[in-house]
Each structure stands twice: as C-alpha cells, then as structure tokens.
View 1 (cartoon, rainbow, N blue to C red):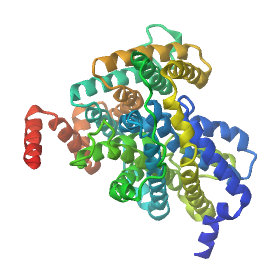
View 2: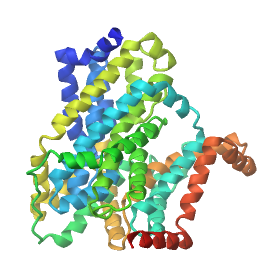
View 3: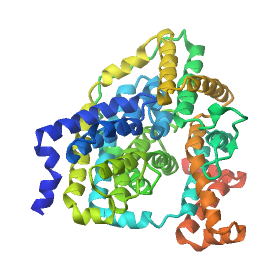
View 4: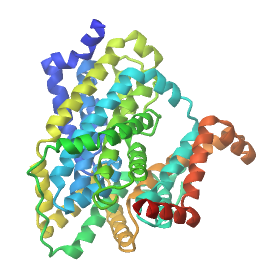
Amino acid sequence: MMETLGYFATSWLDPYLLLLTGLGTLAGIYVGAIPGLSVTMATSILISFTFKWDVNDALALICGVFVGGVYGGGRTAILLNIPGAPSAIATAIDGYPLAKKGQAGEAIGLTTVMSVLGGLLGVCALAVAAPVIAEFAIKFTSREYMLLGIIGILLVGTLSGESFAKGAFAGALGVMIGMIGLDPMTAEARFTYGSINLMGGIPFVVAMIGFFGVAEALVQLEHVAKTPVKQAVTRVVPAWSDVRQYFGLAVKSSGFGTLIGALPGTGGDIAALLAYDQAKRSTKNPEVPFGEGAKEGLIAPETANNAAVGGAFVPMLTLGIPGDAVTAIIIGALFIHGLKPGPLLLTDTPHLFWFIVGNLTLANLFLLVFGLTGIRVFTKIVECPRAILIPLIIVLSAVGAYAIQNNPVHITWALAFGVAGYLLKRYGFQVGPVILGVILGPMIDSNYRRAMIGAQQNVGQFLYDLVSNPISLVLTVALLLMLLSQLPLFKRKRGRSLGEEKL
C-alpha cells in the first residue's frame, strides 16, 4: 500500500515533474481553445521533443497537455460558438447562448468546476475499475462500433431543434463529406471528381473551422451594428447552490464519459454527445430550454469529455489498445521508451500505472486553478466590436485551416464550408450534426465493411450476428427505439403526457 502511494505521489513530490505537469496543463488549455490546433497535434509534436527524456518527465508533460486540451476546447465554444475541439461541439449548443446573455464568466466557471469533477471521477474509474472496464470494452466488435456510430448520427435529431429530419439530413451531409478521398480498403477514389487535392480526404478540423468559425462570422455580419453584450464576470467561481444542484447530473455524465472513453477508438467526442442527449431526455423541467442556455446542456458534455480522458487510458494500459487518438500517440511514446502497453504492464511495471494515475489527478487539480484564471481576458473577446471581431475570426480560421497540413487549398475549403454553413443556418439547419457526421462517417463505413467480411458478405448472417450477440442486440434495440420515438404517433403521445404533467 505504501509503495502504491509512493508511485502515485511521484509527480506531487518532485518539483520538476510538478512544474512539467503544470506547464503542460496550462499550455493544453490554450492549445485546445484555438480551432485548428488539436490536442492530438500537440502531443504528436511533443513526442519528437521528449523521446530522449526520462519516461516520467515525458508522461508528466503529455498528460498535462491532454487534460488541459480537452477542457480548453469548451472556452471558444462558449465565447464564439467555435469549438476548439470536436468534443466541445455539444458545449456550444447551450454555452454560446449563455455568452450572448452576458453570462460567459459564469458559464466558464461552472464548466471548469464540473470538468475537474468529471476528470477526477474518470481517473478514479481508471484506478479502481480498469480491469473490469477493459474486459467489457474488449467484447466490442466491428458490429458494435458500427451501431454506436449510427446511434451517434441519429442523435443529431435531438441536437437540431424540433426537426429530426433536418438533423438527419445534416448528419448525412457530414457523412458524405467524411467519405471524400481514397477508400481505406480498396484505395479507389470516392467523391474526388478527378481532383488530386481531394485524394487525401478533407480533414475534419478544416470542416469544423469552416462550418463553425467562418459560418458564424458570416451570420454575425447581419448584426454588425449591434452593441456587444457585456459579459458578467463578477462571479467566476460558481455558486455552491449550482454545484450542489447539478452534482448528480455531473456524476451521471462522468459515468457515460468513462464508459465511452474506455471503448477503443471512441473518446470524448461521442461521450459528450451521448451525455448531452441523456441530459436533455432526463431533465424534465429545465429553468431554460435546451439550446437556449440550459446549464444542464453545458455541464453534461463537459463532464463527460473530461471523464473520457481517464477512460481512454483503461484499454491503453491494460490491453495495449488506444482509447482515442491521443492515447495512440502515448502508446508510441511508451514504445520509444522501451515499454509495451498491455496486460503485463500492470504486473511488470505497476509504478508506471500508478504514476499515470497520480499525474492525471495532479493535472486535474492544476486545471481547476488555471481554468478559473484568465476568464476575464477571454470574455473580453465577445465584448469586442463586431467590426473588429469578425475579420479576426475569419483570419484565425484561415490560419488554423492552413496550419493543419500547410496546405493553402484547405483555406479554400474552410471558406466554402463557411458559406455552406451560413446557408444551412439561414434555412433552420444546425451545423453541429454535419461535423459529427464527418467524424463518425468513416468509423461507420470501415466497421460495417469489417462486419460484412466477418459475415462472408452474407446479409442474412450479418443480421443474425446483430441479434445473436447480447451487446449488439441491446444497441440494435436502442437504435430501433430511437427511430420509433420520432414517429408522429409517439411524438403526439409524448406531447400529451407532458401537457398532463404541466396541468
């Protein structure tokens, strides 16, 4: 026991490791807040600088960047409706309306506290239930990942206001954009129309910058003469009553985040989406409707995506399977340092496991400190005159799109997606489902084809496999229930029951 505590407290007692963790967390917050600069990009660059370092030093810095970066994406989502990361897409739905009401400081303060809570609960799950969660996650096959992706796409109906059809259309549009490029299995060109620039596909970050950043700037052009809303930053630290009121929701969303994060290849993107949907369905009488500044819609995705960090480490450390893109990079870092993630890692090098647990805990505490500072500076962004802010957003969007691969063509795509996003918004479509489709589409495609190969291209065998496996059966039933819930008959019954409850 004392040995375990010693391993856990390694970063806490070493001033150099303490400094590296703090710097990594602070840098991660600001990297995550800048659209076009992802945590994956930052950690991949860090590997090239730290491969000669001691493994503890490298992990301290990388874990700090990881924790800070996942949280940082929510800041620009709240302030500018531009998610710094895909996992912050759901945050923008209710966070940005709060900023437009002048409550940006309160919104960021509340998300900071709840994000730290979610992160700590995710780390606790990593420490206590790693073998159990990993055993469950390894049972997922291609069929389950395909179903999970489809469910994620269909959830956009609930994220897109009253019209499920518009949400489904936007999600399908995103899937089509995600399919552009060379087929990963046959290397045949899809939707490229003979263009060499489209052969490599369209990075989802470029689409995200266009649909969110440029589109929002074009929408704001219509209101350029309006006086910006002054942001209330007198109370950055959230009220204890709010923390107590939403504590149960935060714990529940953290559970979603941990479980989804432990599924290899998923991460905080799907976790935040599912948590938002769960909060919207389970909250009976929110003070403010979802999509108009509901605090429940802010807390659920932010706690879930931070809890998913701890969950993502579970399959990586116990099975050698990355939970998301960042843990895939960390696997490479461990290999560089002569370590092999997998079942033997916990038995052969328990000190490394408990060092990571202690370092993630420390990074979350740094997140609480750094997350509650600098908010006043950030809120000044939305108080800038639109005549200054809009050109700045477009320039930063162009720089972010170019910086991904130093490709000037990406700037053109970002601007084109911005115009498309503007038109979608004008006709009542939400752009969040488009980005989710871009991200989840390739996952659905590849896993469906693997599942069909496993069924020997036999549709009957494929359908039998769906209902014969308990996990895929549960997901299939959930998918069918989601579709049935959108039928007019069920909607009328649900509306009638809600009316009776109000009476």
